[in-house]
Length: 331
Image 1 (cartoon, rainbow, N blue to C red):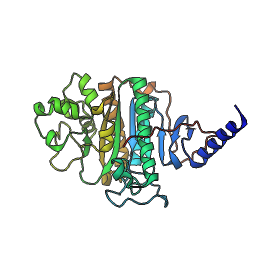
Image 2 (cartoon, rainbow, N blue to C red; image 1 turned 135 degrees about the vertical axis):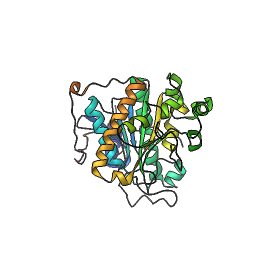
Image 3 (cartoon, rainbow, N blue to C red; image 1 turned 90 degrees about the vertical axis):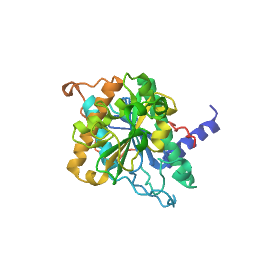
Image 4 (spheres, rainbow, N blue to C red; image 1 turned 120 degrees about the horizontal axis):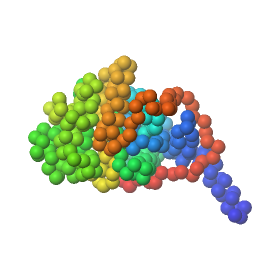
């Protein structure tokens, strides 16, 4: 290689490190990739599980304008319970789920909306949005390659309902129909569980509110949930799934299904309940994945690695960027 080319590569690498673009690090044996200015984080996992935390970022740089329309409040406590679920899944299996986090505050970007509403004209916010969804695509590719099938859990909080709401892109009206109507081909095609529905011996109604649904498993752990056998359909407003579930669920193809989880932020403000909910959700996810995705879950005594990272510990910069850049997501 001629000297000018070497100089160019060196300057490019230094520039990427300075800007915080495409950094790859290892923290407590976890491979971590960062977007621009560390506003998006992707922790690479080994399980066929992807956890996504889109709405509890706390960073609010002044050079990114505030959004002027749409919801701008954070999903308080989603980061706390999401990271705890991540930790518990690793403790229970010895392997980690994939994890994608938006650290930019929702007043600056809403990665659970289309790019126009998400960024509202800000190039920096649009870049964060693109990197966030690019990392999810990377995680889905890794899951499909290693396991063929997998599941994304989009983690949120809300203040409307005391019961946890589980969204599979099935509206309140569709969930209030009887099982025969819910099980129509049209609903099977539109749900974010489409890949699971097409290979499962169970009907759609069984998968979303039957005894082995996420709702049923949470109810068994004393977490009221809609839909579930006890609460098969909502009676009022309901979170059926937003842009992340719509974009990354299997109804658009692929083998990774998606579920939106809405916990109650008032109840999650209580540390004791937050731990109970995190434990229940982690256990429910593992039982669901064991039942429907053939995930091998070892007995607790078989797990060799019990990893309890300190999430507040500062990350040390990597000596050199890998040059990893997420693909730009289409609007």
